[in-house]
Amino acid sequence: MIYIDRVGKIVQGDDVDCEVMVTRATDGSGAYYILISENFSSLTTEKYDSWVETFEDVEEYFNESNWAIEWQ
Image (cartoon, rainbow, N blue to C red):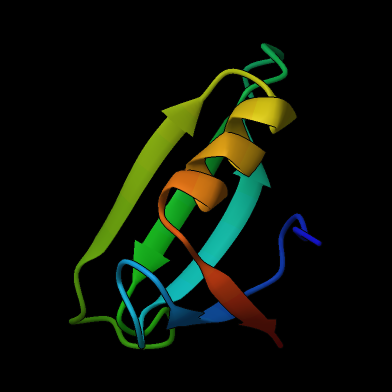
């Protein structure tokens, strides 16, 4: 299951040991951002994002990354 606005730890696949969070875009488009960081709590850690058009695209992104997530 993929949660919205909830941080998860990537335990398998690409970006192992990083954190991930999915959030809805605020522009009314219905799109999503997939946010990745080594530690969202740290102000000095780099954070990356990817924009996808639909929730199905979010699921595809997770599948292509071979992610297993432990949601917090």
